[in-house]
Image (cartoon, rainbow, N blue to C red; front, side, top):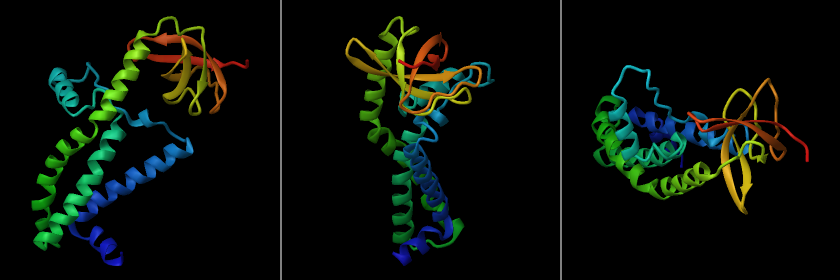
Amino acid sequence: MKELLEFAFSGINIIPTILLIFIVVYWLIVVVGIVDVDSLDIDVDSDVDLDVDGLTSVLAFFNLDQLPLMIFLTFYTIPLWVVTLIGNDLFGFESFAAGMIVLVPSMIFCLFIAKFLTIPFALFYRKVRTETEAVKDIVGKICVAKLPITSDRKSQAEINVSGTSVLISVKTRDGFTVNKGETALVIEHEKNSNLYYVEPYQL
């Protein structure tokens, strides 16, 4: 184990190792409930001077049009860490410069590994999104906070529609806070971002 840790923090291996540590810390924070899975999601701004259609196609190819970024990054980072360490060990590369010979192609190769591994998750998120978009008149209904809801960042709430539980993206207004497990009233829907605004509501 000591040798593995030393090798993981040596040469070029330190890059995927730090990325892996970031992923682990992020999911620990998600479990605690400080942030939600969508907190670092990708949002393509049409006002930015770039080929939006091209970028959208790339994101769709790698399932990032359906998945939260951090889910894809998790399934990208773990294979990248494994492939990089095994490759550098097999070739005996210890220096940073030599390790680039393994890291660069590994970064490209692991994109396709992540695409394959995230297909079931992309299908699940697509189903949930379709169900959410199909639900009408959510405004005025009661939801339950799955994570703390504030006006600072997107969170998630669960709403029951015809016996089916649907997750919606939510925020509050005017500094209101809804704690995890508490009920809230959906007061507004922002169509462009498919975001719902809620306020505290006690049954």
